[in-house]
Image (tube, rainbow, N blue to C red; front, side, top):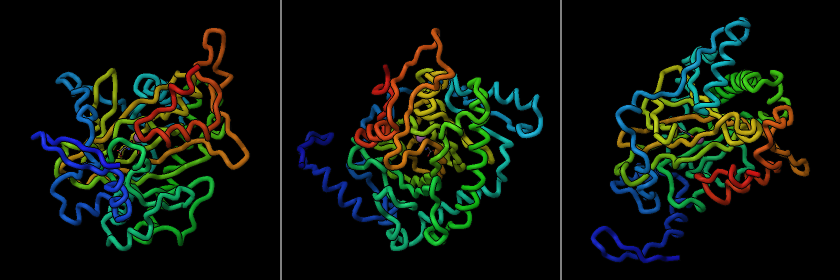
Length: 370
Ligand code: OGA
Ligand code: NI
């Protein structure tokens, strides 16, 4: 539908958002396609409410704040060091919902190559990229711009290449040639790290080490390889709208460009890139099953003149196959008279449906609250 809007000078203009979205989507080459065509102005469909960018500004003092860094040295063979790590993971998951890990066991050259491989995919010939562009999320390899393009109020300045790895991985020949080897290698490494973190998180909740994994929290595992092209007017749009993750847990690899911010005590705090480190965050599902012991916090990525920026988010969550509903609700072992359930039990399907119909910024937490 066409709407009449006014520009800053008060001139009326006809704006047909739906067809702008459709034309963009049908180009099948994402934001990078606009940049390749020499775009100098951010198209209207990407303009976001200024409040999205400026709602909370960072004051001097908060520049000193940063998410905790946890050294994972010794978690596999030193019980004392491991206990210490569990304590730190607990503290970070309760207070920040975000932390950075170092000495996590994934060699830095694999991280660097994963960033390069993602870059190669998004920078290859438009014709080659188009082959992978789809909104069919039953596919194992999906290239698109903005998962909820048609639901969101404004589009993000970002393209994504997704690999749905577990429970049924793509076949080698389904992977794009420009990054197939490194994607397979990185997935293997980050999955193993994810499982170790699930054990630490289970212990941090006071549960048996294997609890979160055994309840199926890591059955689904997928990679989102994001590409944020340089933006000609970064003040008009955003790289990723503020949101919480619909995962149990996410492991994020970011390159050197920066722009990621997390909301802490009502302030946006930068997560500066740290070469070799990985960022871990708690998603809404773990917040729910932990009955709010752990927090899932909002985060966003600012658009920048500098770029491209590359990041790879690895998400772990429960999986529901047809006819096998997965119940999501507070873990019974954590509940007591003093700790009554905050959320009702719901199916994973229902939880995810809310996110998809309401767009990227929507968190289903309030819907599930008792
Ligand atoms: C995400 C996300 C942040 C980034 O994929 O959910 O928050 O730095 N990504 O790309
Ligand atoms: Ni996120």
